Length: 140
Image (cartoon, rainbow, N blue to C red; front, side, top):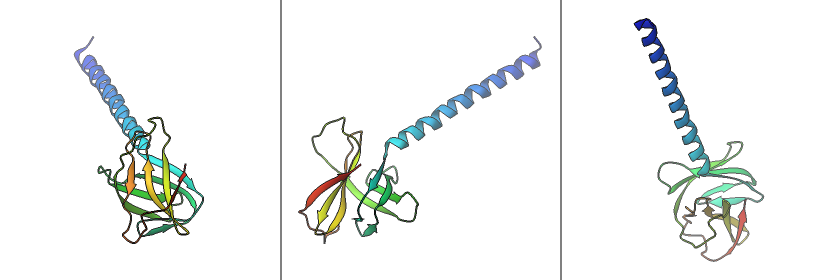
């Protein structure tokens, strides 16, 4: 086999291998990010911090590498907000489905907790004027 043909074949094969490896890396990152979001249909109006949202479909996900910052976006992207969270420590079933937990304060629903499939639950930081007691409900 000619050296030029052999060199060209090796370079081409190396390019294919590198391309496949990069594709695997991109797919792996996309899968990891998909695990970090919750898609929920919320049948009532609710608040997160100072932001008010109408009933609808929402995506709740990490807004950065820091798990303390969460992004809430409705499916039509007309409403969005960032919210601060704290780690939530609670004993629970490790097979629990991701969900959002709301606290009812008067007639208002406040997003108070995000339960994730991996056990890294987060509690939303409530504004000072929100009462500490209330009933809880969940949306999936």
